[in-house]
Image 1 (cartoon, rainbow, N blue to C red):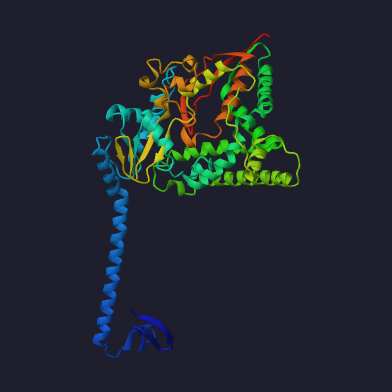
Image 2 (cartoon, one colour):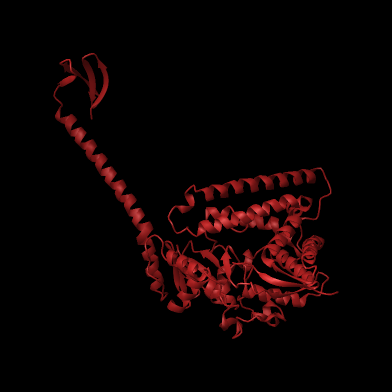
Length: 506
């Protein structure tokens, strides 16, 4: 390699293999016409050394290129095809692996088609919210596999296998969370191992039923505010409203009051931001099948990061202020933030009971359980298989995932009878255990060690709200109502929940 180091007038110095040589320039007055070099003979040893070094570099480059090519080939094709073969060898069926996206394009296309218009008025919503899974089961049997990108996801619908998956939290950990989803929800939802254990111990005491009963006044105030608002709207005896935004506001108001006490106005702002964050995350996830999409700094992704920073700053301020109050011994309010901070400093004994809360609400509980069966907030759960594992008669290789389609299990005639798609609260008249015959066929909040820590909070809030609302109003569906449940992180009405609200004459 020649490297010009210095030029002085009509002469210069250049280097070959670390040795300097002279060169002369013949200038005719119109620019340099010729360069004359004075080179000593390069020895055979130097020539051989140069050739050997060049050959070594070429071999190294070729090896690196082949290694990278092999890894990419293995990542994109060989490993997925090996997993496919291992699953097919056990009799499991599914579509052949398709490069890059697997079945994701077809899933998105089918989901777009079924949600393009409302469905008929029916509780049989699985064909709408889980269309591709349902089609796969019909086509390939009860345990098909679906390709989510490069990973095959095996569908599990048998209660005994669902129980095993949800019980063995270390053999079947939660999948790595999409970085965009982490901006919406992180913590117990996606922590694993000792980190999850630690945070679960801190959080659990705050959601003990005895602690939650002290929050009934908070629930009452939020529900009462909603009822007053509806009474004003129905001053003529009735009115038509969209329930969905009111119930969303009620939920965020209850959580804000319960979590932040007197700071609940700031808590409301946090929930408004979380709502926007969830909508943005859902939009972005629709394009998640595009390789690298989540890392592209689009305007939407930048906005999500801005929201995340604002939420973290607000929560940090709230927690710091409350910790200072605890340190100086100030009397704190009976809210979740206070309880969480206290349980972080000391162990609080859990009572573990679920005695009645002073209200006769057995029928309300039955109704809520039946609604949760038919319209589970989360339509399915997914788990990773990080090491080869046995599940029933299946041998699942590391690298696959399992899918537990909650909605499909909740609507199974085999598990719930011929009226599985009918609204029948009486099936829960003797409790969940009797209704399910002891099987894991009802898990709206998950099941096992990782069951949702907030389920008691949610059920208590819902019971209070439903009991108070039904004491003041009756409902019927509005002609404007369009039945269109859709899953946007959680299940919700695509076009709202329009009803005719009628005030009861007390």
